[in-house]
Image (cartoon, rainbow, N blue to C red; front, side):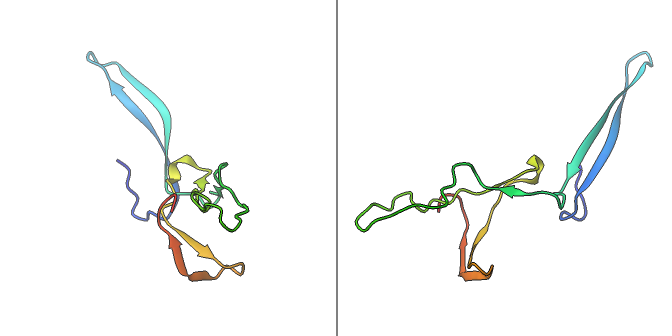
Length: 104
């Protein structure tokens, strides 16, 4: 198991596996690479089902209208978004509101 001491840093480790078979035959397999952490080039992209604008008229049901679908990283091993903050247009926090789970 590879566990970095600095989990906020990105690193790529290259390695080979040496296999020794009964009788003494040796074979090397690889090279393999393991990526740890998220590189600075990681970008989060909107889910294709995210609705960015909608019209709600007085008396209309608002069920499902404000469902927020988390974005996903462009680098698959970086994990998923676990916390989102609502921001004002000037990027300040919107009264400390936050969305802590999908679909809420």
